[in-house]
Image (cartoon, rainbow, N blue to C red):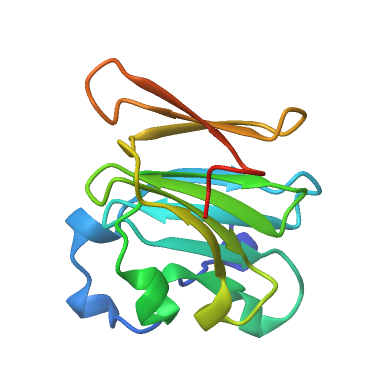
Length: 155
């Protein structure tokens, strides 16, 4: 692989490279959108970023969406996230904050947290069944599976 074929995306542009804490900045989950033009990356610090694959230079620097970009979304340390509804809606679960969040990446960051359920056990793994509109959070408590109906449970 030559240097010209190597592309690097900056997932947290607000932190300088020399100040990055590797224990929090390391990517632990990544998921590609169904069309392959975007990906969602979750780091060990619990922050979620969505980046685009296109020819614009800014796409490698500015995320399309980031939970770190607004105080309302940055307060949750996410454990897992999944892309739902093709590629603009993301469901996320947090074990520490004990919540299930749904983000719409097409609206401004201050409004992107569109649904939330804090009355949960949270979890560290998330599965999505889009045909039945259900989210499944695992291990909020050891060995526990929690089921959420996206049409009703998240308020």
